[in-house]
Amino acid sequence: MPPPRAENAYTGAGITPVPAVSPDHDKPYSPIFRYPLAKIIEAFEGMSADADGSRRIRYTNPLTGGPAMPGVDCYMLAPASTSDTRAYRTNANMVCLAVEGEGKSKIDDDTLQWRKNDIFVLPRHHWISHRAKSTDAKLFQLTDREVLSRLDYLREDFRD
Image (cartoon, rainbow, N blue to C red; front, side, top):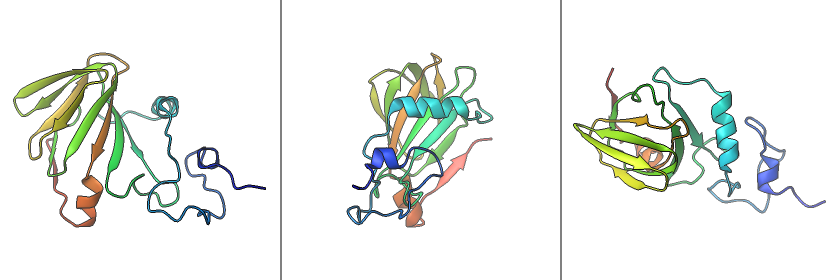
C-alpha cells in the first residue's frame, strides 16, 4: 500500500501518522503543501477569541510543531471589528496579505486602510494594531519571527 498523501495524513490537530517521518520526506519544511482557507475558517469558528476579540492561527509543520517553512513563519489573523488588536512592536519583518474583507492597521500615528488582495509591509520597531471593518476580515502574515527567535535576537513589546 502506498504511503498516504500528506494532505490526507495530517487531517486534524494533534494527529500525526506513525511513523511520523516518511522515508520520502526528509526535508526541513512541512509535508503539507496546501493549507485550505476553509480549514482555517473552520478552526477560527471553533476557537475562543483573545481578550481583544481577535483570533490568530500559526501554520505549522505537523512533524515538528515548528514553522511550516524553516525561514518564514506564517500566521492568519482575524481581527475583531469591535476593538483594535493588542498593540505590539517587534524587530521582526512582516508582510501582510488581506485574504478576505476589509480593515485598517494603525502604525504609530498613521492608519493604513486595506481590503481583499492588498499586500503591505509592517515596519519594524513601530507600534502596530489592526481592526476589521467587516466580519470576514483576515490577514495572512509572513514573518522572519522564528529565525530571530532561534538566534535569540527577537524583541517584542506589547502595549497594555
